[in-house]
Length: 539
Image (cartoon, rainbow, N blue to C red; front, top):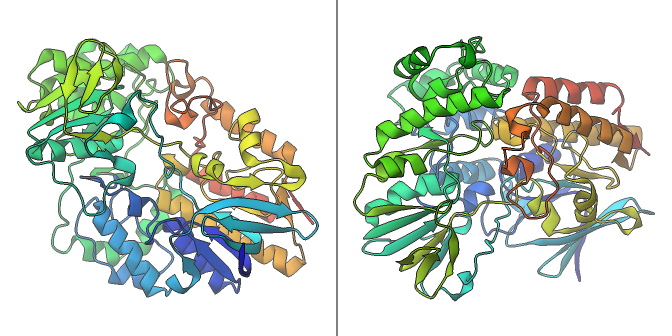
């Protein structure tokens, strides 16, 4: 191993969380080195470059709030930014704050091991470099470790095989080609309309229909960005006070919207249908009982189904595009022309629930009843969410236990999503047990980074070298988080989502994101810090 130096902190990742960590740690006088496997900064938005990749949060909200100059200088162009614009923004931030001198790219962290006697971590990389640090911050992202699909014959396909999670940086021209897309999650829903415009023919192999709605994206109007900038601080305060750290989701504003009080099961069917005319795609969820009662949820799904049927000419295709699982079980997707794409003559929907996938040959995708010739295979098969990137590294704590072993035995447990008992001086940004993916990620990331750096300040000022989550506090937090989701649609037997890890064979079923809302979570974190880091053992 090539010893590369000792730092106060090693940060793993150079996306939103990694960049802010490097900046704030330097501001507080800590020596820091960030490591990232990519050859550029951007994290998720470096890798997510498939056709149509776009954020579902408004650009003016999906951005850093900690630096007024950056807020003033950066010019967003669209309501919801596309991947190239977000990646460019993060590169702008890295340059504006001179962060690159403390970031080492093209470096994959392979293992972390904790020295109990010295209370420090040794960090090893794929290139043979070795670092030592008192603390490690894992800024590895919630959706950063792709799942390789266990499809028979996938390696035998002779044409190009493209993964939406690691799409070619130079793009890909589908013109005149027969394309097969496997999967209909967010990346597929965004890319399918664009691929369909180019391809000779597109076959979409759907395992599970998606809840999606029009994004209603548009260019920012003249003067619109300037109006926000004139009172950006007000927007930031409203974000921090909002349940999901969001003032708007896509083009839909949450401001002034009160929680619904009408119960769908107490409302006549004709009045439910009338809500479609009044509320459009917001109607299926505009009821007080749809997230807490499966019968009510099914009634909401019927409203959603009616909206889908209105978009699709072929009744059989429409029925196949109606989700079979509870509404709210998975994050709703925002799309541009997704359902309309299935009205095209060059697009075929293959419903794998009625005609299961058998395997892939050198030039085709085979289902139980048919064989589809294709030139290009696109795999949109998802991620090992929230824990995958951490499990891929061999993280060994005192006594030789690995984090992967702990999570395999107990499920993805943590204290506040910030730390795991038995792994001292290791912080996880937006880890399992934090609001993370149920919120505006940038708002959650800023809160986590600031809490961690304040904690390190406290340790340095008080002479502490070691911090570890207490098992009892961790267990209490896991029980509290589980109690909030118990009895809701999200935790029902009918819901098998990546929130629960259900897309990963063998993963213990725990609802990973915290559903109590960002304000309640921030209050808990602040209380823990104010009470001398209650639930943590400092030494």
